[in-house]
Image 1 (cartoon, one colour):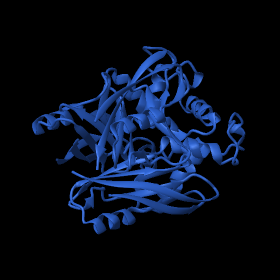
Image 2 (cartoon, helix red, strand yellow):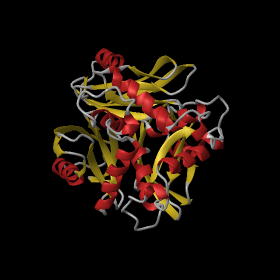
Image 3 (tube, chains in turn cyan, red, purple):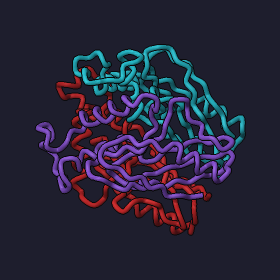
Image 4 (cartoon, chains in turn orange, cyan, brown):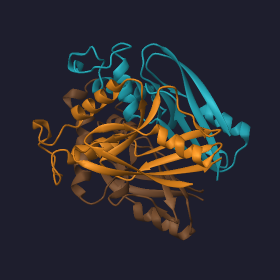
Length: 140
Length: 140
Length: 140
C-alpha cells in the first residue's frame, strides 16, 4: 500500500496534511501497522508538531532563520553553495536537522498521534515548489 | 505487538529506558524485525545517545538551552507563543530538531544498538509531565 | 533480510553510500517494502542530502562546526565531557540533531529517493573510525 502525495508550496510555511493521511488510511480500511513517510527533496522537511496555536509554526520558521540565516546575511559570508540564491544553502541546512522520514504507529486504523500533534510539510525555499512525499503502510 | 509506555518526568532530563524496551521484547520472545517508537508529544523528544558518561547528557541539555534559550532571555524577545511560560516555545523548537520517531532493527530478539548507545526520552519542559511513547514491533 | 554495513572514515566527511544500498537490494531482488537504517554510534550520523554539488556537503560540515564548535573554542568553555579531546562532545551534539535512523520506501526494488537525494554517513570525529550501520529490508 504505497502512495505518492503531492503538496504545492509558495514560500516558507508549515503545511499540515494530517487529515489527508488519515483519509488515505480510512479508504484502505487498514487495521494495525506502521505508516512510513519520506520526503523526496533536500530543501524541505517533514515534521510532527503542535497544531493548536499557529504562532508555534511562525516562531519555528523564525527560529530556523536565526540559526540558519540567508546566505546574504553578513554572518553567512562563508557559504559557497549559492546557485539558486540566498535561500538555497540554508534550506539544505534546515533539511539536515528536521526529519526527512517519519514513522507513525497505527492502531485499528487510527494514527496513534497525541492530542496536539499534527503532521507537517515544512517548506524552506522562497520560490513556489511542488513537493512529493512517499507514503507506505505496513500492516503488523 | 503494540504497547504504550508511560514515563513520568520532573523537569528537563535525559531519561534512559533501553532496558524497559529490551524487557518487553524478551517477554514477547521476538526474533528478527524492527522496533518503532513514536513520542506522542511536541515538547519532549526521543533520542539515542551515549549512555556511559552522564556528563554527555548534561552537556546536551545545556547546549539545547543555548541554541533555544528560554523566552525570557533577551535574545528571544521575538517569540510570540508564550501561553505556558518561558520554557514553552523553546520546548517546541528542541522537539523539532530531536527525533520524534525512532527505528531500531532487532536480531534474534536483541536490539542492534552499538556498545555505547542508550535510548532516551528527553524532557524539554520544566513542570512535571507524564509522557507516552507508542511502541510497535514488526517481525521481518 | 538484515545486513551490517561497515564504512571507514578519516575525519569529518559526508560519505555517500546510496549505490551500496541499491546493490544490496538488487542482489536480494526485492519488490516493494521499506528499508530501515540505524547507525550504531553516537558520534556520527546518517543523512539524506543533495548529492549534486559537493559544496553542499562542505557547507553543511562548516555550519555544524559553527553551531557546535570544538570544546577548545572560547564559546564552549562550559562543556564538561572532554575525555577524547575537543571534538568529542560536539560530535555527540551533532549526532543528537542529525538522523540516527532512516526509512526509505522501496518500490519494485528501487529506493523511492528524489532526483537529488543521496544517502550519507556523516562523520563528526577527527580520528579514523570504522562505522557500522544496521540495515533491514521489510517486504510490504
